[in-house]
Length: 288
Ligand code: NDP
Image (cartoon, rainbow, N blue to C red; front, side, top):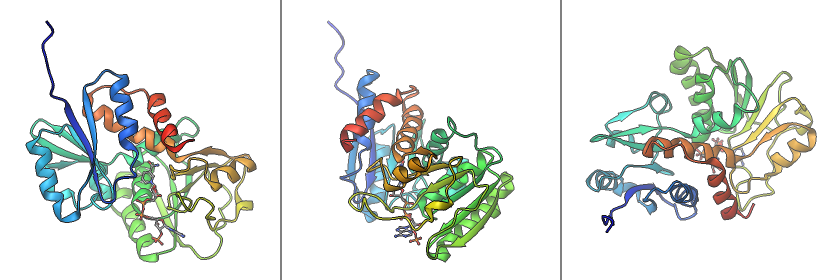
């Protein structure tokens, strides 16, 4: 008789709100596909309960997990170590258990860069990033680490925009050759000629506001530019559709979501997951 084992390896996402986070569907589809008896739990954790929740991960021997709003910064003092990227960004979206230690990493930006590479080598490129929140921070730091030369941050809130600029031109520039500028977002933004990649890293267009318009002068987009949107739901955003009609190469937010999941999965399990299975699981969730 085969040996019985009812104990599963545990991973999770902590957030609040968290019920609409689709990561479980994507990761558990890959666990099943790769024959891993693992679980990925979607757990609502209030900010004041985060220390107890991380202690719970330790006590119950969780193999790793993700953090989403509002825990990405608050979790840092609760961990044993950070990756270089997480340290630079000051934010953690992925925890990995290494021996007795919980290590914080940030896979959002790496997931984006992995989506970009097949269509455009980031080295030496000129990039415009709309937004200066968590996603923009993660993407801009990883693009700099991947060799992007010039980053223009465009943001409505100047404090947040200059905060990111200081990060890029300070600690990040010391480790890379990046040069960043900040443009306060007033009216429709004109993409400067010579730009290689334009990224929407704001939440404009996220369900249910699917028809919201990004204040961007679409005529300033040129067909040789790559246009990327971080919005995963819906994957076919207004920006994605309009940029494709102009002839630009487009990247949707599902690619980034899948690729950051691929990195987390590999770090937790040591197995390289099939991204096609993961993307299909998300497309089913989003009816895409
Ligand atoms: P934050 O709240 O940290 O930042 C939001 C950003 O959007 C800010 O720069 C904000 O500008 C800007 N913004 C929001 N509304 C408007 C508007 N009407 N006009 C101009 N700017 C606006 O959020 P995150 O950075 O964490 O997330 C942003 C988006 O990225 C979310 O929709 C999220 O779903 C997506 N995301 C996707 C991932 C993926 O894997 N595909 C991973 C992580 C995030 P201001 O500072 O002026 O308020």
